[in-house]
Structures are given as structure tokens and as C-alpha cells.
Amino acid sequence: MELELNQQFLTENDCYQTGQAIKPKGVMVHSTGVAQPDPEVFIRRWNRPGVEKCVHAFVARDRVVQTLPWTVRGWHAGTGTSGRSANDTHISFECCEPAGHTYQGGEMVGYQVEANQAYFDGIYQNAVDLTALLCREYSLDPLEPGVVICHAEGYDLGIASQHGDVLQWWPKHGVSMDQFRRDVSRAMLDGDMEDDMTQERFDELMDGYLARQAQLPPSSWSGPARQWAEEQGILVGDDGGARHYKSFPTREETVQLLYRLSQLK
Image (cartoon, rainbow, N blue to C red; front, side, top):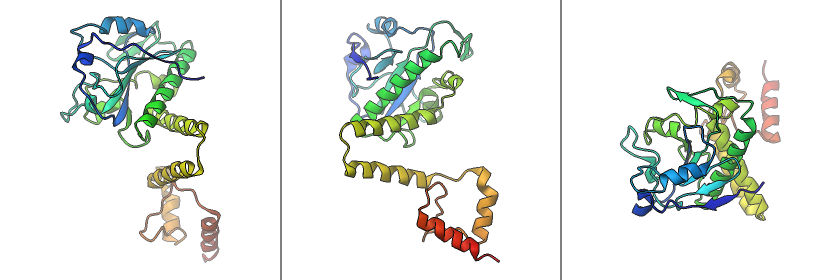
């Protein structure tokens, strides 16, 4: 389903009135922290002077409402422990939460996962599609560290205040931010293919993916096997000694590994 994106700029909000420009370097995902699925409620409350917060969009189950121009500095992240703020670098959006729960100590109380699954699926898909759109528009790689983050991750990076969203909600539905970033990346690839992707563009995307894959560290569970393979000289790595355990082996490399294995006494 195509993303429904509407505009209702918060023209009376002080943030909009200030109109400070930014060059987007990332996207920060928030959730509203209150059981209110209707973005119009927030728009009415925030579209006036004296409200010291403003995001670029609200994500609802059935649509996205843009409330700031993407290149205007939002007031959404606060200041982190480093003294820096994602307000200066990240486009932001709030995911509207469904009705029926409350909060206690930052945790959802009375939230019904099964009953809210369809609602969450709609929110999540719109969040993926919006983030993919923004990453394509501003040439951002969602898999690069610090580019696509939630508020809680922003706090850990020292560029946002101490909030827990969206990690107080999304994991209840089995979704992590890593999964979200991968889904955004896939959505970008699908969008590129729909836009008559050329072989050159596909090769560029694939090269980028393979390069990122090669830099990933190996999993701990393979430690004993890796140690044995290295000690036996079965896996020796490239000219610089890097073994790229997360890279995909070619048939040529596979044959070479089998040959080395056959030479063991």
C-alpha cells in the first residue's frame, strides 16, 4: 500500500516560527508516550505559541501527517549527555500509540499485544515507508551507525534526553531497531527497483551491502570453530589478515577451503 502523506504544518508553533535550517543527517523515531491514536489531537495541542516541542511528522495507522518542513530544525530530542542534540541533525517523527493503556515508571501498563497487533503493523509499515522516503531524499544509509535511531538510542549516543521510546513499545511485538533499519534498507531497495533501477545503481547498492557485511564481527557461537580453522591454516584471510567471517564465499573460495581441509593429516 502506498504511503499516504499529508501536510499540516504547525505554523503557530514557536519552532516553526523560528525556522532554523538543518542539513538532515539522520532520522529519529519517537512514540507519543500516551494512549492516543489520533494525530489531530497532538496537532491541535501543539499548533500554538508557547509549546516547547515540535516534530516533523506524526505517524498514524492509516497515514502520516507532516508538521514541519524536513529541513527545519525540530524540537524533539532535547540535549544529550555530550551536550549535543539530535535536533541539529535528525528529522523526527512521533508514532501515535493505540488507546487502552497507561504508563507507570516509563513502562506501558495494560497494553494488549495481541489486540493491538493490527494497529502496530499499520504504524510500523508507515514508519518504515516514511523513513525510507527520507533516507532516499537526503542520501542517507539507514544501516550506518547513528543514522536511523530511536529516542532511547539517541540518549545512549549522548545526543538526546533520557527517554525510552520506542523500546518500551516495539519489542512487545518482536521488533527491534536493528530489524527496523533492515526493513528500511529493503524498502529503499524496493523503491529503487520500482523506479526503473539501472544495473549501475543495483551494482552500487550491492557493493555497499557486501562492504558493510564484510565489516561485521563474527558471532560468539562460532569461536571454537574459527579458532580451529585458523590454527589449521584452513582460513587464512586476505593479504591484510582480515577474514571477513560475515562475507559470502564464492565457489572458488569454497573449493580452496575444501582443498586445504583435504591436505590435513
